Image (cartoon, rainbow, N blue to C red; front, side):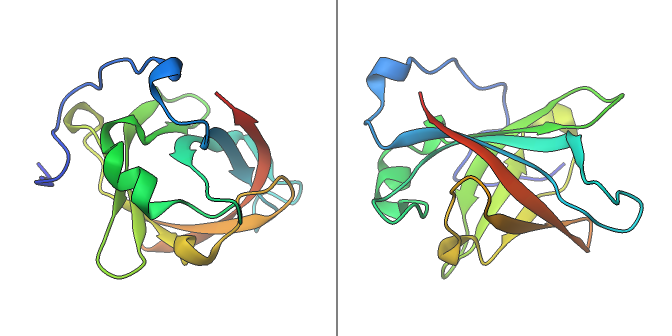
Length: 142
């Protein structure tokens, strides 16, 4: 099993939206066009709960203050949803660390610190040593 001393490996407790700063957003990203998916795939997606700064980038300071609330859900057709947390790695790196019951390795956001999470923008995620591009489809207030 993987371990991350910053995030416990357990099912997350529900977060009350009213307990979070107004900068928190629900972000949905869906698989963009790629080989095998010429139109992309809305069913291959992630939903993130994360704080965004005024420039629409992940707010590292608010993340530090509210780590437990920074969540990710991995959506795949025909599979159960995998739940985890958005975690900060050394430097400007960000990754998705999944809960123990998901039994999945971390997935790393490619240059997430530099990415703007705005509908229509593209971001990349390293999944099992393969880089996939996703399109930000919605960004909404909690």
